Amino acid sequence: MSATPGPTAAPGRTATTAPDPLALVRTRGYAVLLVMAALLGIPISAVAFGFLALVSELQSLTYTDLPRGLGFHGTPSWWPIPLLAVTGLLVALSIRYLPGEGGHKPAEGLAAKGAPSSAELPGIAIAALASLAGGVVLGPEAPLIALGGGLAVFAVRAVKRDIQPNAIAVLAAAGSFAAISTLLGSPLLGAFLLMEAAGLGGVMMGVVLVPGLLAAGVGALIFTGLGSWTGLGTYSLTLHHVPHADRPDIVAFGWALAVGVAAALTGAGVRRAALFLQTRVERQRIVATVLSGALVGVIALVYAEWTGNKASGVLYSGQSALGPLLAGQAKQTAGALVVLVICKALAYSLSLSSFRGGPVFPSMFVGAAGGLAVAHLPGLDTTSGFAMGLGAMCVAMLKLPMTAVLLATLLLGAEGLTVMPLVIVAVVVSYVLSLRLTPVPGPAQDRAGSTP
Image (tube, rainbow, N blue to C red; front, side):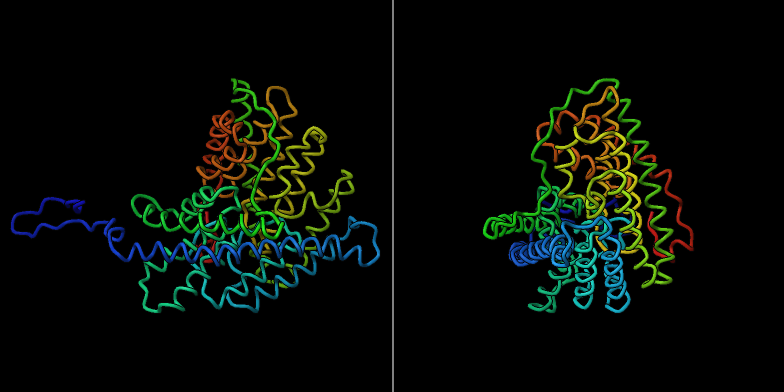
């Protein structure tokens, strides 16, 4: 394919042609890049699997084995308060004293800002492990993206120091793809999340996407193999029981508008509170992070005492709780679901402001619980409410509309096709209103690192 011609040159000037964006694909080096991406997908996905397995084991240790070892019959509802205070201390120390400040600040959204240096990787891993194991309301996706990209760059530079910067960027993205290859239920969903978060488009999207998809495919195979070999599973987002969804009608579309508005308002409140608190936490990192952790524990205690449910309903990312939430919706009253949404949202905002982790899964859980609460009202079935709330809240927090629609529909399998029109309406309403509710950043916000 010839290069695309540029504008006609004026008389007396030399005609020029625009650079061919696909020139890299036709080179031998791109084929080598694909092989490297596939090879990197093997160890990086294995490390990501080990990271998730370690988080799961630490969560069981801190919330089940440790209380039992201390003589308690079950986990006391007040247990999260001291545990999360200690978690806050560990996270604060890692942010303050280790390079990289523990990685990405989740209150500022999910953005692909390049791979961290090798010196920053230990601090990112420790801050994320402490946060997730302690039960804060954040997910593993952002630390895995950073660790995957950082490990890819470290490995490539260890083998070949004179590699070109554009090749390093492609391989770093491939490492991130491999690290979250099955986390969202499909390598394609993880790839779409990264591409939309990075803001790539046009031809360059394909140039970066192909090595990333290859690494993600290899990573998914490694996750599946390790999950089967170890018996630990693949730590993939799945729903095992999805109720039948009714065909959308005019009443359901009205509910889609309402859910979109409610999600945008809720997301704006959570995000603004998190950014407001983040600036205060950074002034007194250790004391404020310990206090934030203790407050998350208090919120979990209030929820447990108020509803009679376990405090763990408020804690953690909500990834593994989405399936049971949908399957057990008939046992939950609308009032209990509203209390769950309020408590989870408050704990989510505090966690965003002080700890390290990803914002995706908690936003999905808060939205899904809110959608199920709305589904108790006439004119809306359970699955439609669940999907609309999930997608609308996800886009309110992440500002990634295509990813939000795909997450809310592909997760539901065949029923997702039925509810997709409603999800699209709810996501679009939430997205547009969220953008209008986002304050225009001023100079002070820019210096603080806030993002719209």
